[in-house]
Image 1 (cartoon, rainbow, N blue to C red):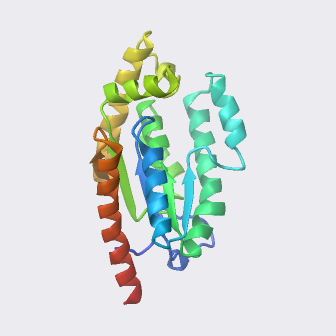
Image 2: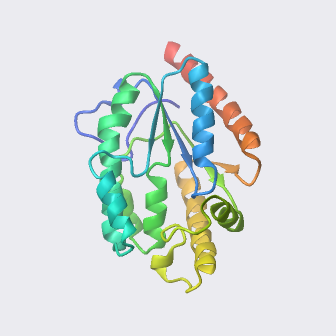
Length: 236
């Protein structure tokens, strides 16, 4: 269960057997409650004495500022955006995720490769090409996908920001001239792709329409089992 491996060739020179920590991924659209859950789970794990490292999309020292600036213009082509995110991920994998796992920490990923892959695929990228780009990725020990209805996602976005994000609404895909309608259509496409990916990559789908506390309780139960099993297997 805890035999570390990469989806493809991985990072040159890195032996999966040297990775002593756990990689836990929480996926979901903006408004699904990911960041809230990451904070709650991190505090809970640290209180239990675990070393915890956070990672997430667009946090690479190498390209994060440039990626944010490029997105603000709303003119990036799908392929350029895809390669930007792939570079962001590769830098974090090599310089943060792998060193943290080698040190025995629990890495909490506020989204991993699956969100950029899903975004690329619904925008028409070849599935085989996308999978090849992210074949360097380490297979996580657990992936939790917070599934929230598109209408709830829209309501949460309006409540928090008073507007819809251009990219999260899929406006570049021209599904509708109306932002709200485009948002709903785009999020439905993403959810369909995530459900296909859940079967392929072994996601645990959680109902994110519930209260944050209810989701946190379920995540804690899942992680307690995961950590206990991991610690037991490490002693064998």
